[in-house]
Length: 275
Ligand SMILES: C[S@@+](CC[C@H](N)C(=O)[O-])C[C@H]1O[C@@H](n2cnc3c(N)ncnc32)[C@H](O)[C@@H]1O
Image (cartoon, rainbow, N blue to C red; front, side, top):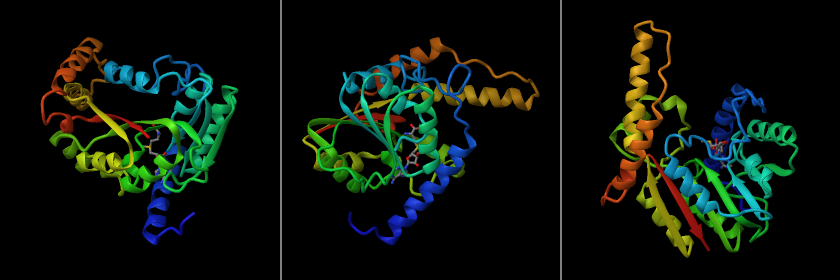
C-alpha cells in the first residue's frame, strides 16, 4: 500500500470522526418498528422520491446471486444486508468503525454472512479483480475522483460492473441549501460535477450517467417549508407527502432530464462503470 500523504490522512480522520459520531447517534434496531427495513423489496432507500431512479438502479444491479459484491463506503445503510439476503457474497467497507459495528448488528440480526472491514476506499487491502460488482450509495463525492476511479478499476474483475448512486452539485436551490447547512456535511465533500464523470471516463471502457430528481426536489422543498410553517404556527402535525404528486414530478423529471443542460441541474445521478 502506498504511503498516505498527510492531507489524505487528515481527510480520512475527519471523515471517520464525522461519520462515527453520526453512526453513534443512530441506534440500529433491526426488525419491525426499527428505522431500518431490510425486508423491503424495493430498497434502496427513498423509493418514493423517484420510483424511476429506484427502478433503474435495480436494473443496473441485475442478478447478483452468487456474485462477489463490494459495498463501497457502506455506512450504516441496510444495503449490505439487503444484498447478502439475496444471495450475494458481500464484503462491506467503511472508514468509520462505528458504522461497521452497526453493519455487524444488522448482519447478526438477519443471520447472514458478510465480510466487514474498516478500510479506506481509495487504498483497499483486496487483490486485483476481487469483485464482480461494486456498489456504493453517496460515497464517491467523499473521495478523490481520480484515486477512487483507479482503485475501483483495479478491484473489478474482467467483465465486472460498478454502480453508484451519487449526489450532484445540481441547481441553485441545492447549492443554497448546502451553504445554509454546512454542519450536515464533512468539509471534503464535493457533490459531483461533469468534470468528475470525465475523470471516471478516463479509467473505464464505458461510463453511463443518468440524472434524476428535479421537480420532485422542488415539491419536497415546498413540502418542508409548509411543514415548518405549521410548526411556527404551533400546529403539531407533520403533513404527509403526496405520493400522487411525487409520482407526477417523477414523470416530469424523466422528460426534463432529456433537455440539454438539465442533467447537471438534477439532485442525483446513477453511474454505471464497466471495465
Ligand atoms: C454519506 S455516507 C453514505 C453511507 C452509506 N453508503 C449510505 O448510503 O447511507 C458516506 C460514507 O462514506 C464513508 N467514507 C468517507 N470517506 C471514506 C473513505 N476514504 N473510505 C471508506 N469510507 C469512507 C463515511 O464513513 C460514510 O459512512
